[in-house]
View 1 (cartoon, helix red, strand yellow):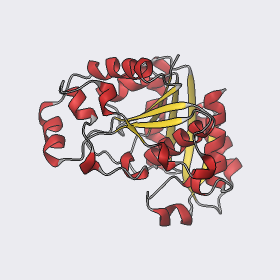
View 2 (spheres, rainbow, N blue to C red):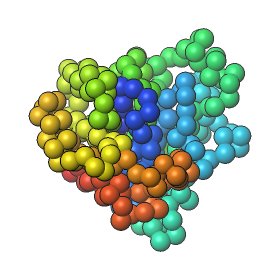
View 3 (cartoon, helix red, strand yellow):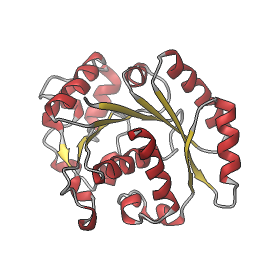
View 4 (spheres, rainbow, N blue to C red):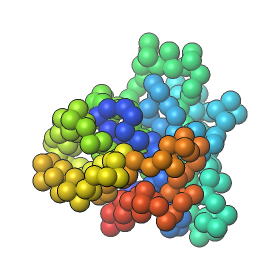
Length: 255
């Protein structure tokens, strides 16, 4: 049975898509078949991390939502993003269901909307037709109908926040919603923390405040900033503190 993992943040700029992509990569390295759905339809971008040329895509999630294709027709195999030393010979794979970055198609979504219930059907069909171990949903920041659907059907919700007071308040709102929706596993990931901070103290304070486990505290990394979404940092530098933090998140998801 496919396990559904949603990654969410109350505000943009938290590193949510980077976290999603790196978690997917490490799951694939462990032999899992993983798909990522970019449901941030208004501002898609996770395809960049996997070096996918949007101009060469035959179908996107938008096409499925408008009834132009089946959901599995939108899937792109991005397993090449894993290095040769960490290949998918063990049966692991990463598939990406991207959203369109065409201006006209984004404008159409904003103007006309779409049938959100189709997403639920699509998530179920992806798991069955692609024989997935995990389906990762990269959500739109904030709270809307699509986000609530993703959270409601999730086995695990990974909430990304920065050490920022606005993030703290927004995360409290999302956590309360997730608890009311009875999501089985809630994990907090604190991202972009300055190395000079006391990571253990931050983790303890946030876990106590929200009554939810902190899966990882990820450092603000100069190397990650230099990479500029040009690849998967946890794959490129597996010995880094960032990669070790992502690995801990994966451990908890698999557990």
